[in-house]
Length: 296
Image (cartoon, rainbow, N blue to C red):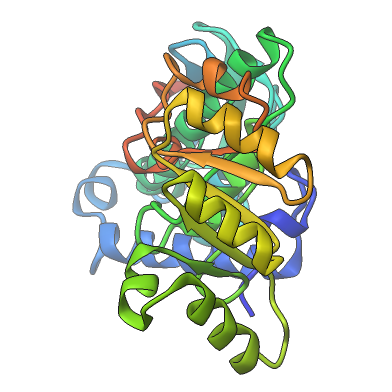
C-alpha cells in the first residue's frame, strides 16, 4: 500500500515515503537530463566545487528541503546541504534557508528539479498555513483538509506539504476510504443502496463518507450511520443547520466554494472539517532561488 501522509508526523521521513520520493525524483531527473546536461558537461570542469545558497524571495512556509536534498544525493552523494530553516517553518523574503556545497556539475544539473519540487511544496504549505491561520483567527476549530486534486505523480509530496503547512490529509487515494458521491448515488438509485453495497462488498470495513447536497439527504445519511458526511456546496445557513441537526453524531465536512475569503465564515458554522482542492490544484509556487556564491 502507498504511504499515506495522514498516518505520519508531518516531518517524518519513513521508508515508504522515501521510496515514493525516490521514484518522483528519479523520474524528474531522467525527464530533465535525458542523455546528459549538455551545457554543464561542456562548461563546468569535473573537479569544480561550487557553493551556493537557497534564498527565499517571498514570505511563506518552507517545505521540501528534505526532497531537494534527495535530488542532489541521488546525483552525487558528495553534495552537502546545510539547512538553515526546517520544513514547516515560516520564512521571510531575503532569508537564506539552506546552503549547498559540492561537485559543481551535480549542483547545476540538479538545480531545476530541486527548485521545482521545493517551490511547489512550499507554495502548498504556504497556502495551507493561510487557511489554517484564517480559521484560528476567528477562534474556530475546523480542521483544514486537502483533496485528491493533486498533480499526477506528485500526490505524496503534495499531501506531505499540506501537513507541513498545518493541515491534515483527506484520503490518500481511492483505496483507503469509501466516498459515496452524487454519481455513485445516481448510478445505483439511492444513497442507502450505495452504502449497503459498500458495506457488503468491502471485507476490510473501511470508513465510509457520503456527500450530501440537502438537509433531507443529511437526515438520510445520519440514519445510515456512516463515518463522515460531506456537505457539498451548501450555504452558510444550511451548514449551520446541518451542524445543529447532526448534533455531534457524525463528523461534518464542508466542501465547495472554499477560499481565503470564505473559509473563516464556513468554520464559524461549526463544521469539523473544511476541504479545499485549491490547496494543491492551483497552487502558486513560493519564489525560491539557488544562487552560486563561490567556486573552487
